[in-house]
Length: 301
Image (cartoon, rainbow, N blue to C red; front, top):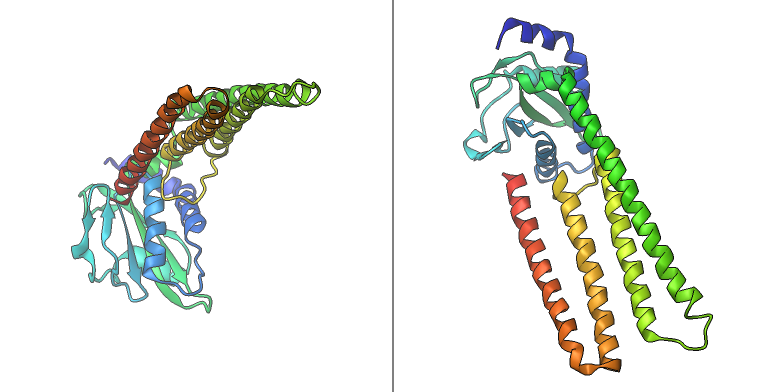
């Protein structure tokens, strides 16, 4: 790391601190009733999952003693529990200033490279200090946050507008399916004397697919365009995938139910095809459960 990088960091400290402190305030309010370590650590891990280059997160008590393992990119360091960090700048500055702080660059104990630590004091509802939450980040990554390159900015905007275009297209498809489903049910069936159960099933399938596609487009707009990430155990693009697969499972389940009733009334010999769809839904459910399990394990690491 060259001296110019440290100078750039000094010039952009305010912007970098604002970004990382925002992550703290969004996930861990600094005044909470009935604060426990078990309550804070999962929120720290959520912040870690949102920072791809995070070196580690950990929690100190009010005296500067580490009370949680250090959760790095690849491992959980349990030996760090009980170590005294009261002499570290990220502890005493956060305690003294009673607000989220960002340290100067220093050699990381984890990687040996220059790093910075963002630390935030956590108080109970009576204003008593209980914990100090810490995030270690490589200096290079902090500089990218404070001074994104032209390529980074262009790529971010490109993908943002691409997601917007796809979301609008999906909404239009969902709208067309919705109109067709409502039209086929209310206009052609209810207005005629010959009520066909087959057309009712088709209308239900169209409306279900419309809902699934609309729900997917809504998720894309909220998470990829507006950046509103809801509280989940799964983060980033994994949430969109889970939401999409969930919508498909719901749509196929309803279609299988419709086919069961349809074939039971019109052609019992074809019930086997409905059973095939039910088996496919079961496989998708099991696959989704496995996907969620391994994704959550990866995020918790």
